[in-house]
Image (cartoon, rainbow, N blue to C red; front, top):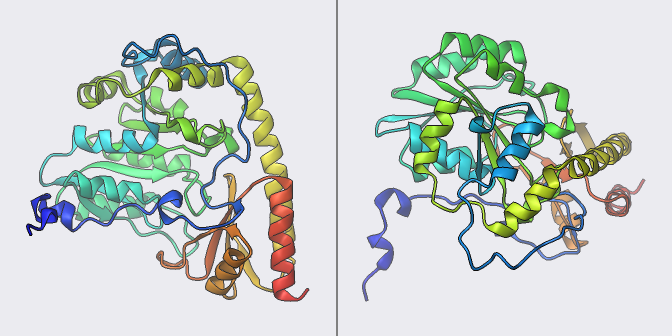
Length: 357
């Protein structure tokens, strides 16, 4: 029998897929492993348009994001989550022998998208405290054995939860005018004053990614955005598939980006931050916890005395968390999404019982 896997491109045969929370799976009743919002809102849906193809870039959706971020509509591109935007950027700007810079530990899809699209990857080294400096990124760009076209920086970072300094970013934007710096702001609603969008008026090589998956509570509709100079958006629009935003998605996204939807999002964020701070305070009282990382997002990264033991114990109790045991410098760490008060109470009860406190 023919081995059909050999028909796949050689680089695809070698590819390790991104291990999303759903791909990893797990049997339980409390899922705090994907940084989702703990609840969904009610949306009105009209099914009478489903016989028609949707608009390529639904006006009210892209205009809604433009209004929300203070940009022009031609600076916005909607896509199937920011994951598609990451891939689109690489497909649009990286040719053979070119590539990207990332700073691990970071969001895994940057490297997966590069590998899938045959782009090269170079790595910037973080400081011992996991902060990221302009010098480290500049070094990675200059020393890469290929032409660097894109630098991906998640801010707030996943899974670290920390921010990239604006002054460091401005230094890079000035020094490397022929490189696009992509700031992934998937979690920025949890610290909105730290957004880099205002810098776009001065730097045409700044690209910002946004999503409705986190603070807006819409991970299930897969709707993300690229915010960039109009010329960057125009190039990406040449590459994107014809109908990236299905009409049901557009209908929900329009409502989420309306004034009432934004108000609801901000209420959820306020509650999330209260719960996150309380969770951190309670975790630090446990003898099994060595460190709780500072977070500007809807999760906490926690270093335990014995991370694998804690992870397996929580799994046995039906609580699904995300282990980062194998990531650089993150031995014994587990990421905990801020869920409902009841879910977080359960986490604390199980951890307290485990430590015998």
